[in-house]
Image (cartoon, rainbow, N blue to C red; front, side):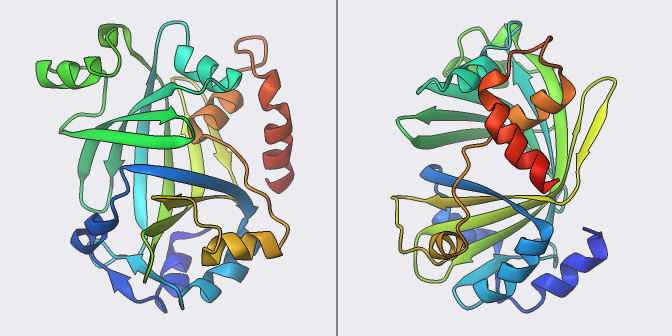
Length: 250
């Protein structure tokens, strides 16, 4: 989707500020993800304005994001996800383009819940300082072995429910890069419903159910790894059905 189109589709929404959204930070939450086409996204977005407000940062109701991901030398973070391990980690630096902020983030998935902690940083590489190493070692003692694996960029629209502790994000124009390759996922929109507790009466959840669109347990990090690495380089057979679903949309 072209950048200039975002203004047209987001203008009708009532805005919410970053400070207001912090009341619904949901750093410990349940995530429900979906993969849809841009066509479906453009059909459903106008309907959502009755129930959700939209995050506005720097006068823009959409945001540019960049993320740099890290893994162990044997790619254990990716492998744990591939195995469906219940307790797994994800480590990244996320840069928020609109306000030029970056955070070192640790996400832990455990018993169906996502717990996120983060630390403000002023760099976008693996040159961690003592404070950052201390932060990382609390979750991953071998932090000094971490290495960057890939980066991604995307545009995000963030909606916040008017009455519930619920956020909804849409990621578009997703692109992955490593040291030698770039993969762009045109037409794909990754949706993520973020709730403190599972609430199937959610407007968005009901909308997806009505359209017979089922949740898809996906990770942008794992999608990127499967796009940039071959099956000979990285075991990914358990992602085959998810990859086929995503490729069908693309």
